Image (spheres, rainbow, N blue to C red):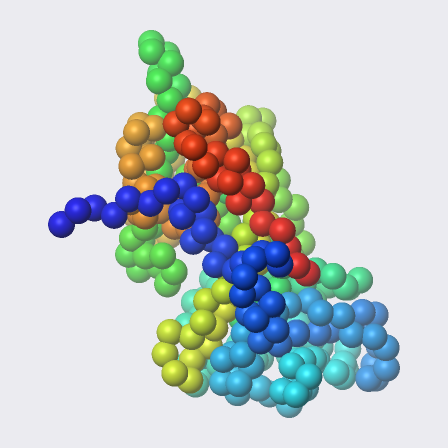
Length: 320
């Protein structure tokens, strides 16, 4: 059986999955979304303006066993948290909702996905969402992707440290990944997130990373995942990822520290390209590595006729 080979554009497309506003079907798809709204300015009653902070797919809006803390209007397709007993009320309401969904078998939520908290953007206060629920509510998140590479002292050949995700991971089990990646906590800047994740996932020394890792840009994506089965929940992944590079000396070798990574491999550029085109990488890791390959001269107009489309696709225009 022939091995599937994807183009770079197709690989990046796996991150997006939603047409742009000027593309066919965009209006039809987005018109179905429910708007998850919070008060623009916090107050203890139902007065004031609401702003959209997330998009929720119809199957989630319909199948979710909403608690009394939420107001769901299927006609206007809005989902609000209208009342607040205190400034932490909204965060507690969201967490409670996820626990209810998990108790009814609608959501798999590991301890880590429950304890890691993201911040809801677009309002003037801190409202927290457990990581495992961010895509359910369709909020904008941000995180980091860091590529660690080595250069041969003799030949100058570049190789990339590529981890294989643990087979027990709830998402993308057994897939290849970028050297380090993760979401930023609600009170964390992206640089601090990179340093923390580098230590937690790859045992890379914090001080070395602070002194040597360089932010080189961003990629973004917007991906819609409908329910896998009738009565299930769907997701909207909206993320901005800050991209880091770091050259690692031979004596600093990435090693798994937690249970998220099975093993690290030091791959040649050809091995990495082959695995990307065979769809062996987690989707956002593949997009990050395509960006890396372009910036380091391994993807050029001569080798990639659709280069302009590839580069344009790495930065997703965000409708919210």
